[in-house]
Image (cartoon, rainbow, N blue to C red; front, side, top):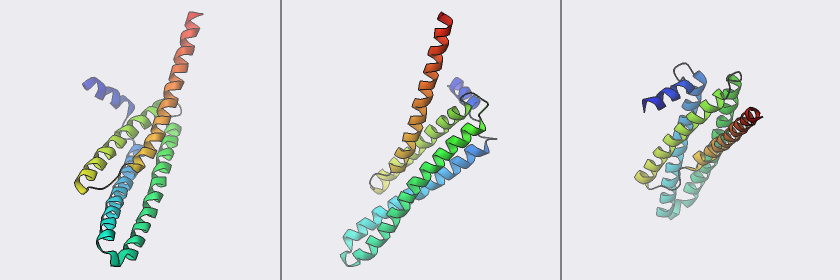
Amino acid sequence: MSNLSIKLKNYIYLKDNKLAKLYLLIFYVLNAIYLYLEVSKNKLFILFNTYPEQQKFYFEKAHNITTLTSFMDNLLIIINVMYLVLNIIKYRNKKYKGVNEYLIISFISLLSIIIVSIILHVIFSTYYLLEPTFLVAEITIVVLIITLIKTAFKFLLSRSKHEI
């Protein structure tokens, strides 16, 4: 296990990495706000069904919360892509350093958000709290696939040069 932690420390220096700290701070704060809004929207729908005389008020509130959460989905995607681009620019002289750091930080942060979402889903009996993480996870998986393909091509090309 210590070998894995040493390898991770070679890729990530969070102590001096202000970009990663800023990304994680923004990512976790936005996800916390998103989760709060989703739980609130679920509570509003319960009130919407409980008090039919105030349906218009609860419907307007739920609509406003839905607008905010869809904006936050887009904001999370933009922040994730910006972090990827800035990380690649930051480590442009080092081979795969930016992409490796992005993938490690992204997978760890997504895993922690998914765990928190599942816990909140169980506690508050809400529905589907993982929507923004799926969009960010798709970007992360695409970057992972591109990196794996690029690494495989480089490996195959270097291997064919040695055989000739």
